[in-house]
Length: 230
Image 1: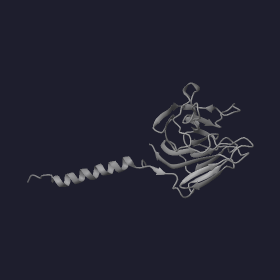
Image 2: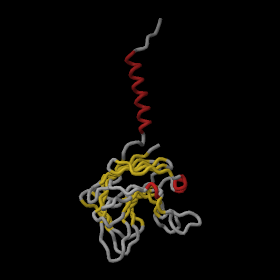
Image 3: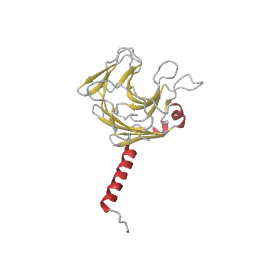
Image 4: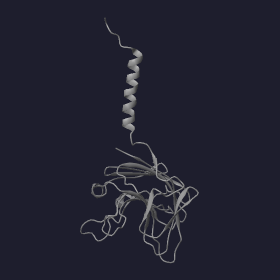
């Protein structure tokens, strides 16, 4: 007797297989919020004495006179990812940034790693969104490497809106780091050397140190979320 495949059963099996493949492919690819708007349970402060407080669902970092750079950092490390956040500078005098793939392995406990610059545009534009090497040092170097984005690529711009919330997007995949501010791409950098020493690390919210007799100044972040990439 010739057997005939049951169409309904075949369709069900195919659907189950497709669903299984889809779930496996999407595993770990969902967005995860790093800040719930209420607590700092996923964060820890490294270096400096700047203060970090929750206000109206945002993280507000405020300078402390005489303090070096301060960093509020995730307790978890991340390697390849897409990161989104909103940032606002309450004072144009304050320089800030968001650390990615950062560490504390220089021997002095100093936070070091790539930083996405946050800087007020002012009248002439600024370097917000470009990549800075925060305290990254190598053998034989007394000082950090400074800017990772080459000087001829750091064109001052006004994509950062002073006194307003600004949407940042960062994609770090292998040695390539791309950044956008308010939908406009700012930087597309590939740096094999830094990737070799900093393939993964924590995310850190920086409050920059200030000169004596100045401040206090504040910067705020909200809607911080990340999606890990395979």
